[in-house]
Image (cartoon, rainbow, N blue to C red):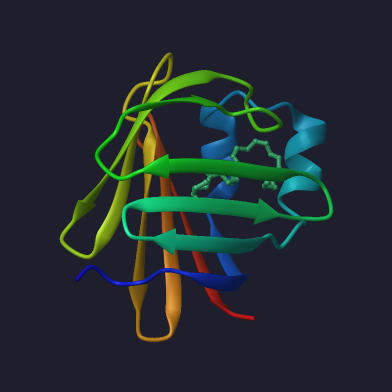
Length: 134
Ligand code: 1AG
């Protein structure tokens, strides 16, 4: 049985987000606002089916997928690109590869103690976020 990431999680730290956004080509004004917000993750894990909502006062983002099945992702409201995304379990880490215009792009979620971790990476830049249960 894989771990269960389900729940409502509040961001408690956000390292290197600016670099990650720069790698994605996010404009100055958007970056200034985006780095101020503390998003909440609302994750629903039902077997291999996931719904992950990232909610904030500025933007919201929704992604739904089945582990092991490639899907078309439109990062609407973020960098507005189209990706072929594939999420798999790497031991207890839920890992997404986002194939598209940007090289080496993706993210990894895992739980350590009572915290949810997220690393988002793009072209060698890594943003590290931690969340605690709401
Ligand atoms: C994600 O999380 C994306 C979640 O896939 C959003 C996190 C970073 C934003 C990415 C690029 C920055 C572009 C624009 C900034 C605008 C708003 C940022 C703050 C609000 C976020 C909605 C991985 C995983 C599954 O949890 O989605």
